[in-house]
Image 1 (cartoon, rainbow, N blue to C red):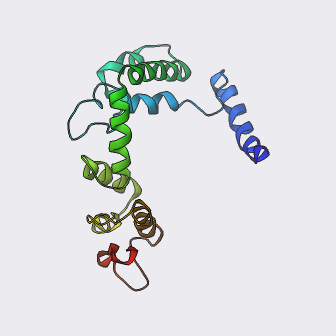
Image 2 (cartoon, rainbow, N blue to C red):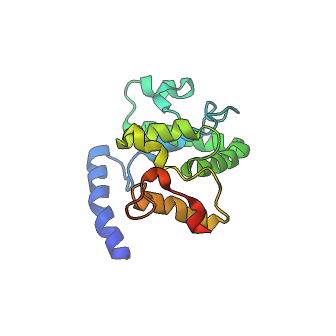
Length: 175
């Protein structure tokens, strides 16, 4: 397993070393990803709390994207540093983000409609199918059945069984 990991990682690390003049085995997206979540706008207590933001469009990171001469590696390092500092100073937001984004992953909770609609558009899911890919609003009786529900919908492309339409999906079969 370790050999497989190395086979996949070595070419990417060599590419990054040559392209970025820095050792970045996993790329330069971690700072950007962290900054999109751990920031003052995402921490606001509203229906979009913990919804990721685009760092170049945020005032608190604007200086990094408008500063001439900063490399991709420098920007990533600064974003990571600022985001981790923010998360360390706001553990309440970290916990809220974990809770809210777990709900959104299951297409529930505050702001989930916005997040889901964006994701569905990006994946090219036609509008008529979007609602059928969501788990039912009636909560299943156990966390296991909730996972089975969402997995079943995902694996079957929104169909609960052979010949049934996506809109006829029901959690009753999981009870």
